[in-house]
Length: 106
Image (cartoon, rainbow, N blue to C red; front, side):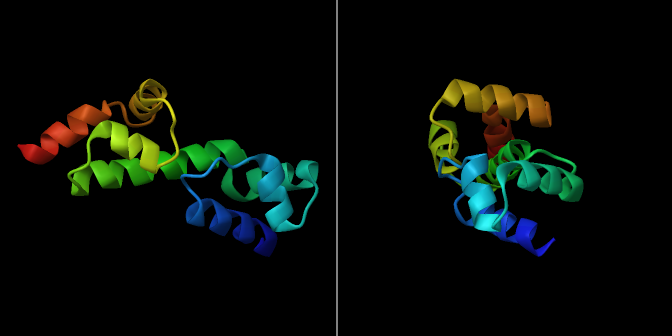
C-alpha cells in the first residue's frame, strides 16, 4: 500500500505532466507488471484511468471555482487537445465543460 501511495502522490503533484505507467512504477519501486496489478487492487482502476479521473476532477473544480476558459483548464490539467478533454469530461460527468462554466455564471 505504501508503494502505491507514493505513485498516487506523484500523480497528484504532477497532474499536468505526461505520466506513464513506467514512471509511476519507478516511483513506487516496483516492476511495471507488479505495479499495475497492485495499483488496480488498491484503487479498482488502472494507473492511467486513475490519472484521468484525477485530472477530470481537478478540471471540474477549476471550472466551478475559477474564471479560466475551458481551453486553459484543459492545458492546466494535462490535456494537449481541447476536443479530447471535452469528450472525456462529458463521458465522465455527463456534462460539457463549457456548460459547467456557464452554470457558474448564472
